[in-house]
Length: 142
Length: 384
View 1 (cartoon, rainbow over the protein chains, first blue to last red):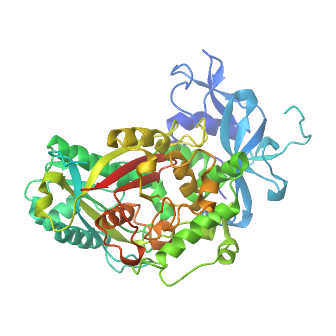
View 2: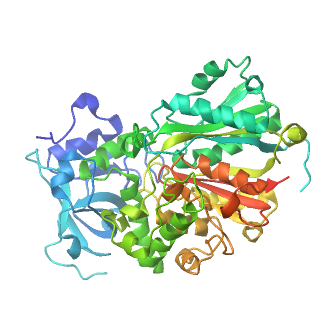
View 3: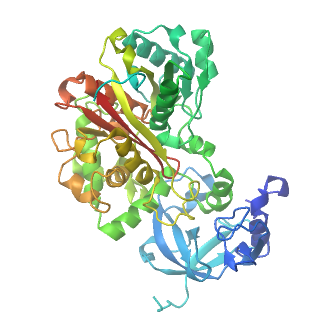
């Protein structure tokens, strides 16, 4: 079984809040309380105002596909049984970030702009621990 | 263009056989390619006082010790993934023209198929902690997958087609039939084979992906004023510059996926050379995947962004087209020496040494580098 998060000693300090979030069942991103914006990927300072003391906040649950690939061949042993699987760049409009996401969906059901919702397998052991599924109700606002 | 003072030039090139299993160490391959380049330039090994190794392979110290170099004054290693070979020409030019070194060796040497394949090599790229935490645990870990994300978005925004990707693969394979040193020499290909090859990371099929190869390539850079000492015409490095996209170590943070390092490097390289894309007779494009040829044709300025697919479908890149690309067969069909084999071919084309695949009247060659999620470099070489 793959542990949900790496041992503390193996965690990069700029990503500790990410792992803490997954352990709590949440997808979190660095949040600047000065300019009230998220930063992604996690960096040791706010990408918008340069403030160095960032907190971590839960990301909004919905995003939409910017682009994606369907992986048929992988060198990652844990993922071989999942092929073909979808990995996407997902826009989270409410947070103004784009991030890589594993999409648990039929590749044929995926398209540009498809709305997705993130889930965390907080029981641990699932691969991957964080993933996106098509949003239960297709949103129509764009 | 007149040869001015210390203007840098490539005065010797060397390359080993390219194979899927060399049977030699990468340092041994480096030694062979270096000896070949020194012989080609008619230069003694002891003259080498600058070394620019490709990142992740044999070091400057490895070759300096074998050659028993008496006094090494300059070493540097660019870190632009696959763009490092072209970036190395920029460093070599700076070293020679500033007087930091008189004779610079730049090289790529590796067993890229039989030992350190791509999945291992990318573990040395920048931003590794981000990839290890935010990508690999999600099943994303290879260049084919990263660039498939870009390719699909380009297809969506600009209508770039499967047929255009296939045209790149077919052109490289056809060129390789004219190059006895190409790994795919003797193995011609038709579109049906291309389009029915297995899916790797959709939209990339197996035959959208470059080869993985064992081998080495090396070049010797000296001042153009030394040209009379060398048997072959010097290839002037008119300009060689690098560029980096925003969020250079991470795709998710990049505002515009198509605004890459090459987008920034190309205008300043052409300006420094005093040339325009129209002046280029031959382009050596870092063809790690089919779409990256289309993308780099656009970003280097050979056609507008979004029109690269049509450009290749109109057969401009074929050997008898308006802008022949990779006469040797490229990374896709000749072999993958991280683009240093593109530099070697550019020099041989400028000298007129390429036999059946020789492009007529080559005065200016552009060589692109692409790597590490979108770092870029461009060199413009000219006949002396």
